Amino acid sequence: PIVFAANAGAPPPESVRDAATALVERPAPSTTYGPLAVTLGMAFREAIARFDCEIAFRVDVDALITGPGIPEAAAARFAADPRIGLLGACAFASEGSARDVSYPAAILRAEASRDDPLGRLLMALWIDAKAHGYCDAEHANGCVSLIHRRALDAAIAAERLGHPAFEASRLGEDILLALVVRSLGFTLGEFASEGDPLGVKWRGLPFDPPTLHAQAKSAIHSVRHFGAGWCEAEIRAWFQGARATRPAP
Image 1 (tube, rainbow, N blue to C red):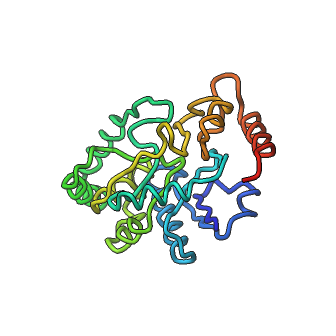
Image 2: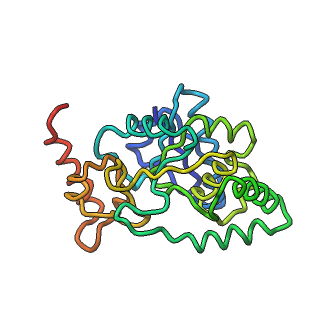
């Protein structure tokens, strides 16, 4: 089942709309940041209310599923360590570069110091997360990530998932989700390193399509481009051809 979430100004592509089991759309002042965190919270609630799912798999429209095995690999990783609530590209991008979170960390500290509903909420989350070893602005890149039902249930019970106060935040929705998850005592798990199913980077692909295919990556981001030599249409066409020639399991 597919739940498509979108803020005003970011309508789903027709192919996604046709495939979606449910649509969560709402007017919002921004298609990213805090407003998107609120919309995603609504989408996660919709997913677990309608479907008996153990893991919610978030995929952006500029990501691409390129192979099988992600649900099984994620279920095994979550089962191996029940403390993990969220899987994705956390401290590193798939090509091995460390992810710099100094800028969002500064925004987090500034917003948490505000004397308004957002500031008070962020301060409460921050204090709880710090008690569990949280590093400021740590997160799983929201482009492709997986969250376990245990973390979603805990976040809903604590009334923290997609909290309305997030609407005023300039933090990325993935940073806000990770803050909620960490505030509840869960950890983040790397799922985009060597040998893992995800091949992701914030902007562009971490490697060219043949390399990602050889690495058996099953979900990639961002297909907008790779360097100067591959555009989105070429990337999608290459993987479509690779799927067509893949031997049957």
